[in-house]
Length: 156
Ligand SMILES: [Zn+2]
Ligand SMILES: [Zn+2]
Image 1 (cartoon, rainbow, N blue to C red):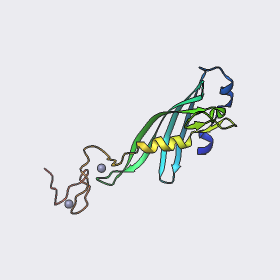
Image 2 (image 1 turned 60 degrees about the vertical axis):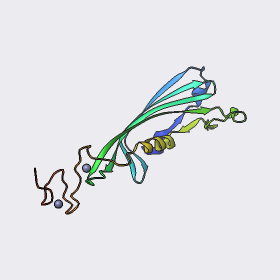
Image 3 (image 1 turned 90 degrees about the vertical axis):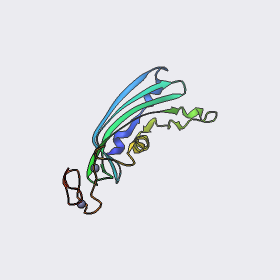
Image 4 (image 1 turned 30 degrees about the vertical axis):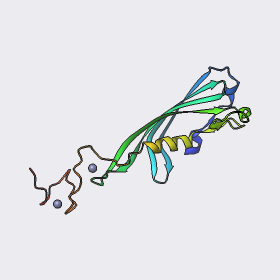
């Protein structure tokens, strides 16, 4: 299944339900490609759609693992990312007198991909470390001090 299908959700029929109706959807994918250098493995999401007066309130939590490189020792490492957010999708006819961030399209399909992209991207560590205690590389010879010793850093 490609990314686009996974993240497109039809909320049209929920609009015909009474205010207060809730629908929950679980999404799962072994691999989601956000863009060419940001991929999420073991992606899982819980989507909660709430029929509210103004339209649909979306509450979503998602998680996944991404590959980064430790800034100290340059070893590839995996980071678990998770994000929670909510967005209101207002009914199209409210467009004239409200200032909502999102409006429901006429066909009732909402696309969660841009939200997952936005919120998960914010979770990527700016300076990823393989471990808090990472000892990094020797400035002189480049030895990985987590796993080796060198003449500049003789073992204690
Ligand atoms: Zn490291
Ligand atoms: Zn060295």
